[in-house]
Structure formats: structure tokens, C-alpha cells
Image (tube, rainbow, N blue to C red; front, side):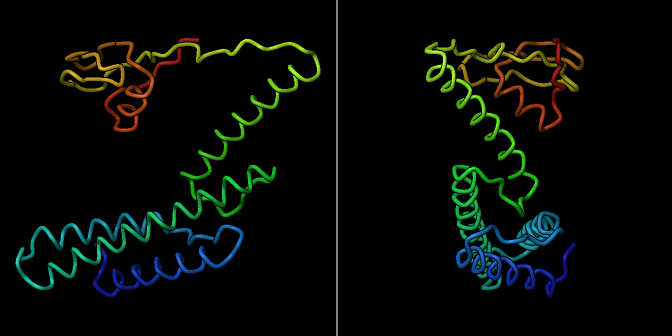
Length: 189
């Protein structure tokens, strides 16, 4: 758990990063341990709020601090998102990315490449390419634990499931469950 001094230091660090991000063109180099500090800060703050007197001034101040931190982080990532998109549209690969941003950039570059290939087919070959949808709108998954009925993005109910049940779920729901380690995605091709 983070100490009060470290928690306060992290708050100051977020403010400093946010100010730098607003003031310079390229992405700010984030501290290597930023994500770990963020999770530790959030855990510490939640723990403090769980054990504190809900009507105490210090509790109200902590809630206000958390609200400010959430707004700063939201603004920080919105600024970074715009910088990333701008860099990509200029044709350069942004530097100083966090892991979550790196994944987004890789996926976005794939989409841009695919788009340019299609446009080249139209402009050079006068051929309108068929747009391939994802191989399937469903993912085959194996449930790693017992799980109740779930309503997916197609608004259909699936389940309930027992451990090691196989199922075909809509892609987005399957991915969400996989990130929560409820299912394992199975690659059948």
C-alpha cells in the first residue's frame, strides 16, 4: 500500500504530467512505473475511503481529490489520444506510448493499411474490392469457471455455463470475458 507521502507525490506527478502534455507537441514520456503507481494510488485511496468515517472532512477531501484525479486522467488521455491520431494521420509512429496506447496504435495502423490497399485497388485497378467482414462475428470460447447467464451485445442471452463448457459468443462479449479471465478464446483456424 502507498504511504500518504507517496500518494500525495503521485497526485503531484499526475498534475505535472498533465501540464507537460498540454504544453508540448510530442507525447510526454510517461514514467516507467506510471501504471503501477496509478493502480497503487487507486487501491490506497479506495482502502482509505472504506475504513474512514463517511461524514469526516478528510473523507470528503479524499472524494474530491479522487474526482480531480479522474478528471485529470480523462483529460490527459484525451490529449494523448488526439496527439496519437494526429501523428498517425501525418504518417508517423508516435513515441512514448503506454502499453494500452501501443496496442491501439498497432490496430489503427492495420486499419489504415487495409484502407489504403482498398483505395489503391480502386484508383489503380479500377476494381472495387469486396470488403471482408471479420471471419465471424462470433468467437469460440472455453469457460474457465462456472458462469451465469450473460446478455451479449446482440441482446441475446447465453448460458449459464459450467467450467470447461465450449460456446460461440459474440466477439466483443467474448473478448471482455477473456480479459476478466472467465473464458479462454480458442483459435480454430
